[in-house]
Image 1 (cartoon, rainbow, N blue to C red):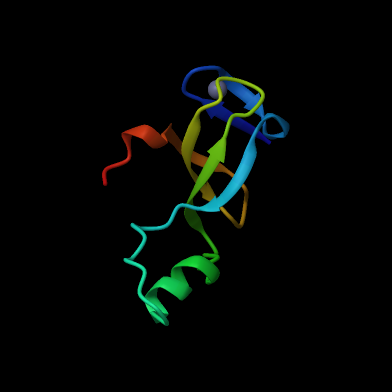
Image 2 (cartoon, rainbow, N blue to C red):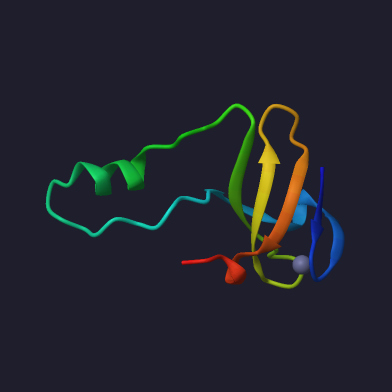
Length: 86
Ligand SMILES: [Zn+2]
């Protein structure tokens, strides 16, 4: 599989580190908070388009937001994680 890195161009996935699903903002920590525990341990694992964090470890060392179809592994879009709205 090839990921089109915005800085380096098309690169093999072996150059990247997969962190997992890019989740919405982390909820505030409170003891026993179900929302916080769910954020840390639960995964959505969509069948279809999913936004994920990938790190280009063997390239530009940049975190990317990659939209990938989990059924076909097609990469639908790639943007810099630093441009993610908070
Ligand atoms: Zn890169």
